[in-house]
Image (cartoon, rainbow, N blue to C red; front, side):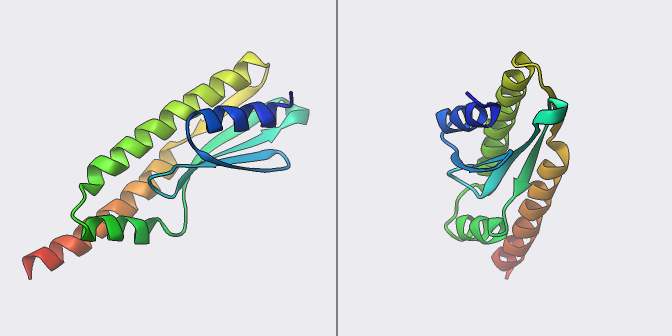
Length: 128
């Protein structure tokens, strides 16, 4: 089995919505549009694992805030789950001789920036 297929199967096992495109696998979380993206370079036996907020994350967070959900708790839960999947993917890669580079922090910062933006916007509405 190709490593890309193994990664896709692993992401599926964790309930992510998976897309494969050549040497890239993208798994998007069900609760929020946040994705784990794995770019495999077979010739170098290496892969980069990144976390990326999707374009509609702000809208999704705003909808949840409007419905009274605890969006901080939801975001924390989704990020924790995606971190766990990233670690499992890196283990899978390393077990097959690949060097895995985790680049999760920048994506987490981007997600938290979106969260703060929505929290600020909705705290203003609550005060009015």
